Length: 444
Length: 149
Image 1 (cartoon, helix red, strand yellow):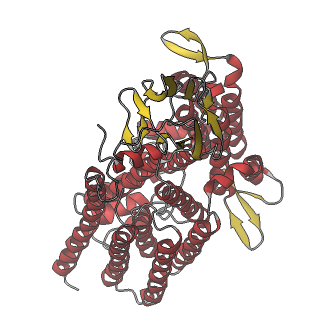
Image 2 (tube, chains in turn red, blue):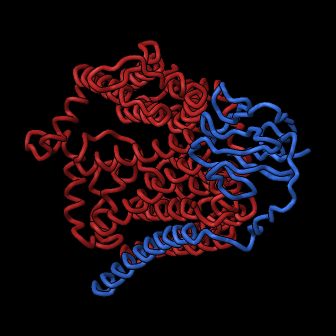
Image 3 (cartoon, one colour):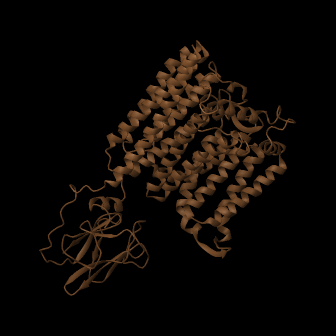
């Protein structure tokens, strides 16, 4: 709390350097194990990456001196591990592309920290951002530009540029939800009835929840993307609960979710096969077909054991979609349980820091924004890691900072930049109760 | 390269990965310690000696959203977040009925009405009714009131 800003930033720099060392070390180990000459070109790329990260750190010293010191290094270490895994799988094509995307991502991170000097300004543009969010979400449905990849209509193809607008839509929508709920939380929290021990708000206050439910069902039915659909609805539910503290919303929301999931299960054969694979993955009837991905993922995790095979010495290339959905299993095969546990701890630390930022922020909008942003991050991580380890039915979604994919990297760097902005602003303007406490030397 | 070297390098890598995590956790630990060691008495001025006995007649808001507003102390003044307060402060750190300032004989008294985050007179938390003097500063949430003649 009273730690000097330079002290905070020095700790950040030390961690960041360690993270970049880990990244370079991972790439070097891949090179040594695979005896690949192509990795020679990874060296200047890694150096450039280090320069970008350190530049971001230096700018934070100047413009966000009081910000959380852990978020950037943690994001960097996850990003570096993912990068090494992608390089290992595809040194010619996806590896260099991911480096480029990371550079663009760090540039977006810096731009967000520099441009959004006061996050409360975002609340003013809530309706614009809300419409942009819904527009981006539904953009892949547009004829001509929308594109279907692997059965899900998630991509937009604008000639030279292809992207997944849903990734950016998440952030726009969270800003909108935060501003909307901050304004209306008292109203929505009014409980007029008591049913079965729960305080129930008026029927009309369930309107926003139903609208969001409809929107997620749209995403599920028209874009056939279960992961995103689940993500959008759960973010709204989490934020509604954070704003109102009414368990009734959670209860009704869960019922709606179960209803939607059942509808999806009845309507789509691919949902049924996902559930079937989840329940009985090694069934010989489909282990070579629908169950192939997930069983390969589990074999990879099993091969890894406790310490893993070591970088570049396993066969994670056998898993389909390894660089995107199954990046976690690649880490599991080559770094073992210890490696995946470390990755999980890093994700948990980021989430913990995000929640801490939300708790320390004083204004309702900032609190809800931080909580919502970190909720996307956490829910997305849970959905995909649960999916590839067979804890949950598999739905294709990216693992933040690690999976291959430009849209995902960019939106996650923007997300972390917003959290860093909020944490800086909160620390720079401490709340009066705490100040008073410090001045008089503890609560009497 | 021989397998054994690659294995050693693998363990080295995992080791450094965990050193990274340990250092990250240490940053959190240091932070928690920093908060516990909160007192910085160097910056807190010694409590004013309460010798001059001059009663104020009005209160001026010198800090907070309603900065510059002047309040008369003729009537009992209730400060809080609720509508019934004489001075309504829209601040989450202010209780619905937070504190009151009222006349007692020739003097004015300050009383905390069981607020959650406390009322501070010259940076000391108010626990009982206390007499106000000119120049006193009363802090409630984000707002600071100064007593003037």
